[in-house]
Picture 1 (spheres, helix red, strand yellow):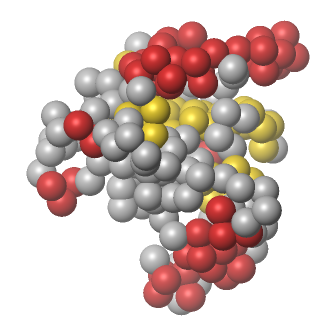
Picture 2 (cartoon, rainbow, N blue to C red):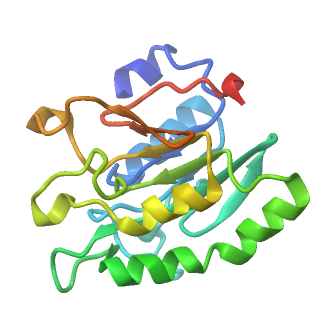
Length: 196
């Protein structure tokens, strides 16, 4: 991607969405080269957010973890982290903790429903939903709270990272759950927002 961005192959990109575990300096590089907005969620290899530590955030980007944004008419929400597999792991949550985090989004989702007559168009996450694009090792189990969020928000698209095709654990990087297209973005995807 460094070369693609520097050689102007990504000039038509109007928005960058980060699904975690990309070095923050790399995301800052993309912001600089492409001069376009960036929304991201943290992954399990990213640092926990600390307002006093600039290394815990992407300078110029917007951390969308448990937040919602209206970007040029597209309603986007974010959910960072993955299932807890180490007691002291950054951005890791038990299945119960993930549900608690998802419930925190409900007031904002309700406001979207009232204001826009829909809750979300696009949900980005680090982790995949449970049973969809996840793996059977403890670090790569999906989060059940994401399945619930998909069912109640009904986004058109759900983008996630965390699981990798080079491990041959995924047969397909796109799956439909009810009306939501779930897409594993590893290693990267060019996504056309004209679908909205």
